[in-house]
Image (tube, rainbow, N blue to C red):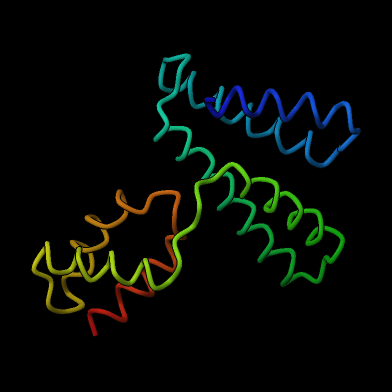
Length: 148
């Protein structure tokens, strides 16, 4: 089942169960996917493009969560936290830090990196491998640990 079909089914279920938050998030994701399709000039997005959109939506919400937290807006923090939880359902299973560390070690060996000066090479090689499965900030942290 494609992501769009899954979203449509979940949207119908959310409407029937009167789940306003879930319905709102699903509609936002569908709109983002349609906008990406328009931008790319296609009606069927690849799995990778869908993953890119989902990751972008999740990152935006995490940034908002940080900002609202710093501003002391607990009402908005709770709303954004709920949206993040709903979005995470559609993302692939996230890698554990141990699994990520193994992938980082393999990638460092592949690109013959030896110091922090090679950080860019390692990040460029690793991000396509873990796209949607790990947060970029966590990947960055693990790479820095392994290169030091």
